[in-house]
Amino acid sequence: MSQRYLLSGMELRRDDERWYDLLLHDLSDACLADRVSLGPFESTGPLVEGGLVGVGDGKAALYKKNGGDRSVEVYAITDDGKLELARTLREPAQVPNEQRIFMHTSGLPSSALLQCTSDTVVTADTYCRYPSSVRLTRWSSDPRLLEHQTVDFIRGLSSDTQRESHLRGHAYILPAKAFMTASYEHTLEAYDSDPITIIRSFTSDTLALQWTTAIPQENSKLLFIPRRNAALALGLTWSVEEGYSSARTKVALATLDAASGSILATHILPDPQSPCGNLSEAIGDADLTPSGNHLVLIFGDGQVAVLDVDEYLENGFSSVTNPEGRIITHPFPEVPSSTPKNKKERKAREEGYWSWVDKAYYGDGQVVLRPGVGEKKPTGFAVVSWE
Image 1: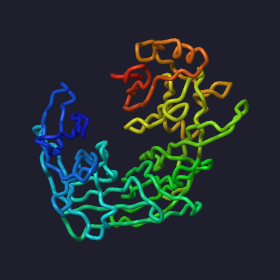
Image 2 (image 1 turned 30 degrees about the horizontal axis):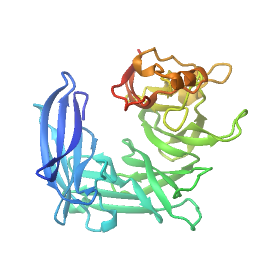
Image 3 (image 1 turned 60 degrees about the horizontal axis):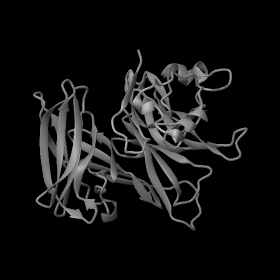
């Protein structure tokens, strides 16, 4: 929630009732600073009517349903390090029943938090069925600020199969007081050889649509670079390369003008200098550090490259690309997480498709890597840092 505190949520059962606890830890000593128990919550089958929607601007938004009344409670941290209920916000009356927020069995909400202030919360549905592509809801204690906005599909797809839209990233553009959303519009369970993600900008005051741009990738992240008033969209694309008989999944990075949505540049992330296996679905991953100063590239076996953001926006990957067209990286040191543990894993490293990284979490000056291979479910993490 801030540079000092870490907020986490935990679903519990007490006397056969579902509760949700908010845990606040002080990062300076890792001690529990506060714990707030909320509930009990209603549930219908696997769906739970309460839980943490998200954290934004140092505040936590928690959804709860009590009978027919649905609300979002906003919690803030007091000066003495305690969680305090700052405001209870209501839902617009015009939201249809099938579009109301709920919590999945996994604990994840059906909506993403776009903005959280003391007066309003804006959420976007993470999944929509045709004809809707985006659904935005503004919760507030002021009836004049309540709003529900729906935007339809624009990608032309066959009507013979179910069409759906998934929210694949969002960002708040502070100078323009606007939201950006990335919606991957596609057909259900159909191979998408030419994926398209629709990037849209909405004003935060009225939720009115400002502009729309289509980018040729299946997006996964949407990031804002304030000092350049630009957005970086990271996603997957498919390309056929020399020496390969079929298309390979690659990471694409599209740079957009945040004011107009114009695509300024698109770069495909090259393979690393040492061949390795995929990180998740593609050969590598990329993200901005929280400060926005660096673009960090991570590959499946822990290889890392760090670029200055301004250098990347001007010249792409040229400053970290060798004559063979591969990314110049720093290899990850030999530690238990990165070391093959059996014949199969050793063969994978020898043949250039060894991978142990499952997910990366990006910070300023460091990245946390979560392992994802092994006979047993991996535990722990590894940290890479730089100056």
